[in-house]
Amino acid sequence: MNNIKEEEGRIKDILNSLQLLASEGEIPVHAFSMLMKNSNSYVICEQLHHKWLSDALFAEIAAKIIKHLHNMDKRDVALSSGCLALVINDYKNWGNMRKKSRFMFRNSVRALIELYPVYVKIDNCISQSMILPMFHSLHLLIDLDPSEDDVICLSELMIKFGNLFSEINSTECDKLVIKLRKILCRDDLCFTKKCKYMILQVMDFWTYSWDKNVIPDCLIEFYDEIESNNNNNNNNNNNNNNNKEKVKEKKNEEIKDGNCKEKEVILENEIVELLLNNDNQETEL
Image (cartoon, rainbow, N blue to C red; front, top):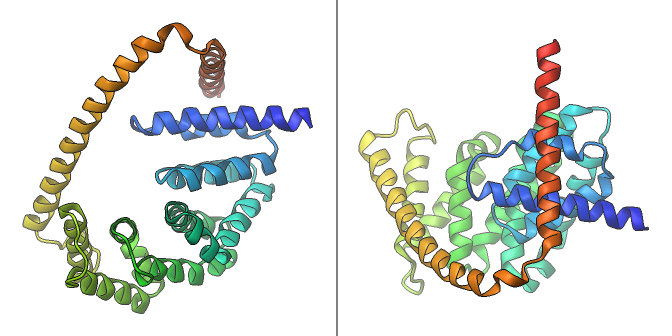
């Protein structure tokens, strides 16, 4: 029992570090995957599941981890099977999850979509079982009294995976785009500029068959400019928040938890050692 608890704590620390690095840019997922390769698959599944439900950005990271760990040992399907069971179970219980937390429901949809391309490569036959839940979940985002966050979630997924959706089932993809058009025209809903721009981007991408090579440059420049402005606004907000946090940190500096720092140092040393070992192995080869 203690070993499982220790394993849970170690995996949690690794994923927390991964989550922190992800917010700052590209991360060496393969290195973190190496740290987890001999860990209990059940523990990894549960921790990944918790992370992708609690963080809207973590589903993409989870997909990369599952892919790397599978490629390291393709005979071991415990992790991939466990994660698939969890994401399908969340879909089956979507009603209760949505009632409990719309945020978690949206993240479960993100996870289902992000994991699909990975499972196509792991086992194409198994991935077929994800198609119906995928499209049903996407429709649920916009069919049941959608909030702006629901519409933004669907728009983000359509912008990123629209071409994939169209290849799998063009009819269902078309239906989703038409629903977004209708949402944009409703008088009883008031959306922010960000949400409106994203819906417009979905419609434009759909018009040009999701092929960025044939989309007019003026449209690409338009959305790049919007994205740049949004990023600048986000950076300004982050700077303001950081200033507030610095004030808090100064007040709390004397009561920092030394154990947390020690764990971070140990984890960093493990990663550095792992990368050095990999470099040495490549040099010997």
